[in-house]
Image (tube, rainbow, N blue to C red; front, side):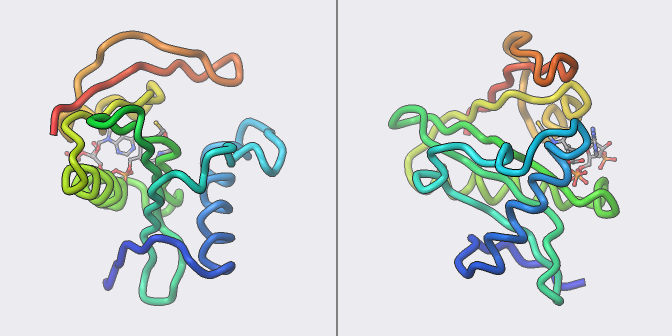
Length: 145
Ligand SMILES: CC(C)(COP(=O)(O)OP(=O)(O)OC[C@H]1O[C@@H](n2cnc3c(N)ncnc32)[C@H](O)[C@@H]1OP(=O)(O)O)[C@@H](O)C(=O)NCCC(=O)NCCS
C-alpha cells in the first residue's frame, strides 16, 4: 500500500484533515463541529497521511512552545487503520521536522488510552494533567529528541 504524508494545501485536503480530527477526537463525545480546531492553526505544522486514493488515514499537528520545544496535539488515526503503524509514521514525521528546525524536546498531553503507544515511541510520563469532557484523563509526556 502506498502511504504518503503531506501537509494539507488544497481545500479538499484541509477538509479531509479536519474531518478526520473531528470524527476521531470530538464526535464520539458529541462535541460540535468546529471544536476540532484551535485559534493558532496557521502557526502549526500539520501532517496528514493519505493512501493512494487520497483517503485520509491519520493526522497530527505540532507547534512551538519555545525555541527548543514543540508540543504535539490532535493525533488521530481512522478507526479501521488504527494499530497498523499510521500513528507512528505521523509522530516520526512531526519529530523529524521539529528536530531539523532545532527542537530538542517534545511535549504532549496523552489520552490515557494512548499512553502505551507514546511509551513505545520513547515518551515518558511527567505528570497527570487535565480531564477532557469530564471523562478523558490526560497525562503530560515528554521525549528528548
Ligand atoms: C493512539 C493512536 C494515535 C495510535 O496510532 P496507531 O496508528 O493506532 O498506532 P500504531 O499502529 O502506529 O502503533 C501501535 C502500537 O502502539 C500500541 N498501542 C498502545 N495504545 C494504543 C492505542 N490506543 N491504539 C493503537 N495502538 C496502541 C500498540 O500495541 C502497537 O504496538 P505494537 O506495534 O508493539 O503492537 C491511534 O490509535 C488513535 O488515533 N486513537 C484514537 C484517538 C487517540 O486516542 N488519539 C491520541 C490522542 S493523545
